[in-house]
Image 1 (cartoon, one colour):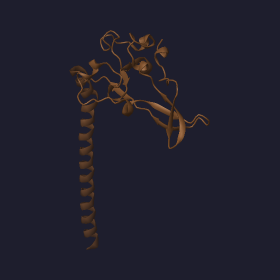
Image 2 (tube, rainbow, N blue to C red):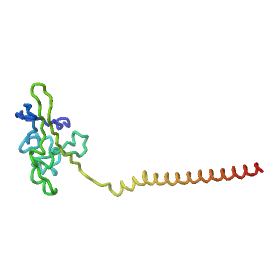
Image 3 (cartoon, rainbow, N blue to C red):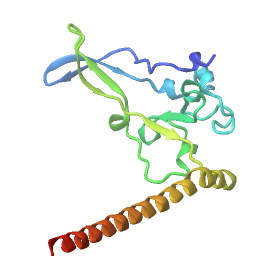
Length: 180
């Protein structure tokens, strides 16, 4: 079901860490969360697009479309950390660095307070441009009507200004005649 495809980024078992001399447990998201379903069979639910995922063999990208009412939304770690090398071919300048791009949560074990965290995710959305037929429909239903309303607005302002000017001139003439 769609709900089964919406998972939390469950943290790995804790590791000790210190921040400002306070002992903390560090929880991190394991690379297996972003692994391909061939490496981590639990991720098979996220393999919904065979072409995009190269038959479910690409790592590093989670398809969240089923969690977002079918909208094409994908998440990755920044710079495609833990992703398959194939994802790097069409993008320049990516330099995934574990310490800079991982997700972690440092929790003080006695109180449970989070004293340091980093939620680093990259949202990836499919892009598209409107087709000619839909663009023409949009223009006829929306844009053309807005242009018409703007023209009517200018005409009404001009007419109102003209009427005001005419009444003002008539008022001045009448006042001048009455003052004689």
